[in-house]
Length: 230
Image (cartoon, rainbow, N blue to C red; front, side):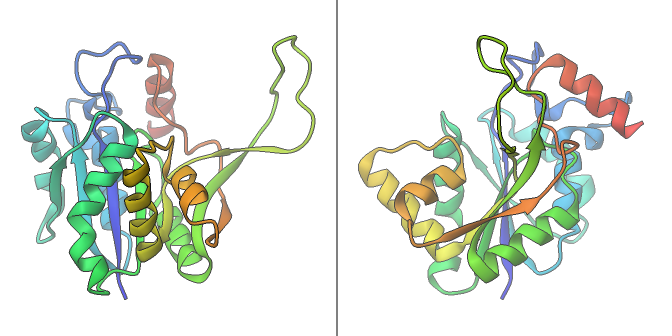
C-alpha cells in the first residue's frame, strides 16, 4: 500500500531576515528557484518509492511562487497545494483533511510530514521513516546533540538527541489523533507531540539521522546549507 507525503512550506522569513518565505530563497548562489529549500525538499520527495499523494502546504499568497518552483520538477507527477494555517499544527490538520478520504478508504497506510525548512533530508531518510512507521506505528529522525550547557554554563549530562523531520505515522492513527486534538483545541509543537498525547498505544521509534539534516531558522543557517551544497 502506498504512502503520502506532506511538505510544510507555510512559514515565513522573519527570523532569517528575508522579505519572502525562507523556503523559497535559492540556496546554491544562483537565481534558480528549484535550488530553494522547497525545491530541494520536493526533489527528495519525488524520489521516494511507493508514494501515492504529495501535499504541499503553503502560505496564503505564496501559491504562484510555489507553483513556479514545483512545476518544472513534477514532470507527469501531480501534487495537491493547500493554504496552511496560523501554526504548524493547523497546517498539518489542513493537509490531513486533503488526505482524509484516501486514508479512510484504506488507500494510504502511512503519512510522512516534513518541514521544507530542512532542505537536506535525503530520499533515503524519507523511505526509512516510512518503513519503520509501517512496522511499528511511528518514526522520528533523531540526531545526537553534543556540547550543550545549562543556563549556568554547566555541561548537560547524558546522551541527548535532537528530533527532526520527516516524521511518519500510520495514517489511521494520525487521522484519529488529529481529530481528538481538534476537539480539545490542542496545538502540538510537532507531529510526534500530537501522537504522543492522543495515540499513546502507538510505538514511536527513533530513526538514526545526522546533524546535516539541519533546519533553516536564521540567516547563518542559509549560509551553512549553501556551503554544504556547493
